Length: 426
Image (cartoon, rainbow, N blue to C red; front, side, top):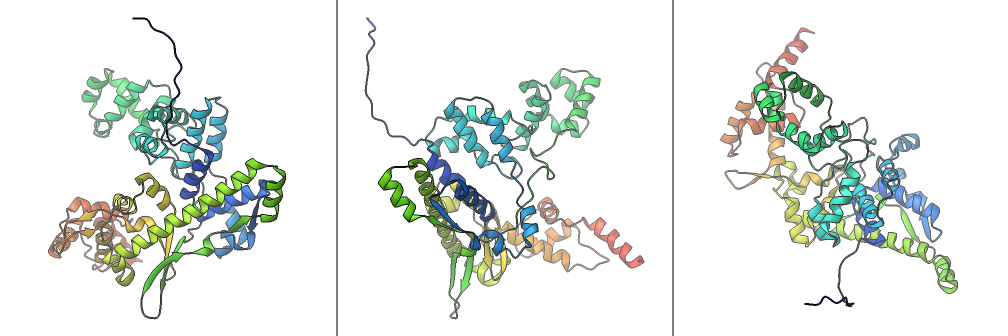
């Protein structure tokens, strides 16, 4: 059979990682403070944008201006972008890597999978994986990891260990914790001295890519949404406009630009930014409507009436991708009667209860209330708290109570007893 070269013309529809799409996804993840910074920076270099600084987020927080400046330190993403830009990557790979930087959480973890991003962006998963590998080669070691174990592996690789050896070492963490030297020696094929040296190396690692001291200081929490109660008791969740600076197109300059054909790229950037802000507001408004429908009991009776729900439930009901929901919830808050609640508060796992599933957060609240009401001289053990909750119809194990107590930063019963004794002696 003869092989002859030929040309074919094909029409194919696909979603590309366009600048407009990157802007939309990046703006959706931004907190009000980050959005204010981004708009200030864009308005400073884009003459088509007019920004009303009087409504900037800093003015809405009630902070001293010096405190506000201190709370808005340059994010670590800037350094990562500079590292990526110096690598000389293929333009598509560099564009995806820069997009991944915007997806990182404050602790440096990447909380969305490459498969999800490939589906959402319409790009080959192999391209996203290659871009992620480039980002994970940046400093600090462990950046853009998707789990603690992956972060530890990346840190070991940065210290000169081969990837497979690093993965094998991390899989043996339980044995290192138990000082099970024989199992470690057998699995890794090392001597006892080498196993002990490996343990010492593990102790130098950090469970998170960015330690608290390395992360940018958290900006003050500002509400994107606000609960409104009218005189009849009817509830509504509306945008909190004080959280968003006012920005608009300079229509006079737009008309001049369209007539004379100058700076079309800047005009396109300005329109993309405004469209992204509108899309962000629409998405948050839909989330507010969903919360009002699902969590009416919370708004009427408090945290104890929180209904168990997940981000996957929200994504399915709104017809959005889970990674879109993750971006929309990150760093956002709802103002309920003057108290700010992070949107993440409204999503928790369900625990079996006598009268139906209970929100894990509502059970955490019960644990805190029970410990707060305990006799000072006879603090409740985790098992006692679990027994009382089971008597109330909550199917819960002692270890779950211990996990909730630790998450609430409440000392153990033995420590609470010692602290009470110290107070009595004072």
